[in-house]
Length: 99
Image (cartoon, rainbow, N blue to C red; front, side, top):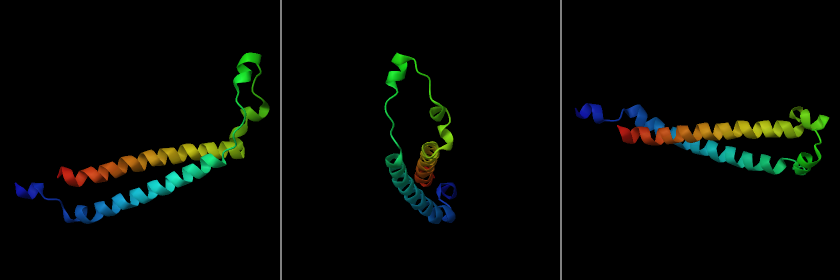
């Protein structure tokens, strides 16, 4: 019965390494995200369009190909990676204690 409760050697050596890798990647992604948010161009508010009934301009409709659109897309990708590495970190953190 005690054999089932022991943690395999490869888990003892590899999981702390994976935890550190996840933490370093999370820190790098967070710093990158902060920099990208600061690089984003902030436009004026679009609240006047609701009152005047103006439609979006050609630029507003096709801004996904612009620098601002690429930065926004990159921000969403980094947010997804942060969520993924956060989940992986907590899985690696909990698995050795579950055994």
